[in-house]
Image (tube, rainbow, N blue to C red; front, side, top):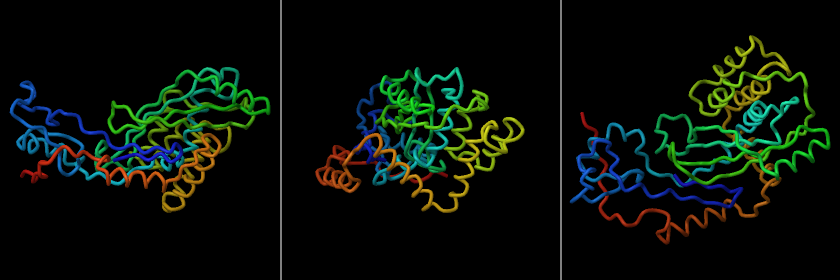
Length: 305
């Protein structure tokens, strides 16, 4: 499914599927598919097969990911829905409170997998927070941090977010910038380092309920009753997400407003969503948005008994 990043003025079409038979046990692969024409799955246009036999053999596995491509996905709303969660993660990873702060030396990098074709129909959302890494910080981060620290705050960090439609692929990268104007809290209690990423993934990916995430946070120290307790800031964000869970419109509005404020502060892009969608429509009319070199797609196979 294509991505649209309005804060960057970017539309990213789906890449063409690799020219390899998706059936892992394809008998024709070693011979270079001699005598077989590679064709795209007619329904999802996400994988190729060298024969109907291979497609039928792979159907049980491919079925959950065989989803017609939609118009586009916009990860901006998803990201800013969890803004508070990512801010807590940054504080924990970079140890922003105290003398061992890594603010001036590191930044954070996330990889997010998108699309039901990659994740499967049963995945609870269109996005999967896949990897979290600490990287070397930039001079721009250091300058911004110095300015905020001169005013009594903690500083600022950048967070790069790469969106890909495969678990080991590449894609567009967007940079999010977080300011931390609050003063240093010498009594801040950190969560165990080996629990931070797991709690963030559990909150964002939806594989367990927010009630379960809340209990895991409380279990970190046996209590989480107020500011200063281990995981308190994350617990506050989880409870906000629970409050909005029953009202998707309010949740989208909250994320949209947060994203707009952050975008105006960091990028200043003037292009609108309508302008990008207009470009997408023009590409489709010109035959540039999808694959046009396959005339005979394999029909969707019937499920075998």
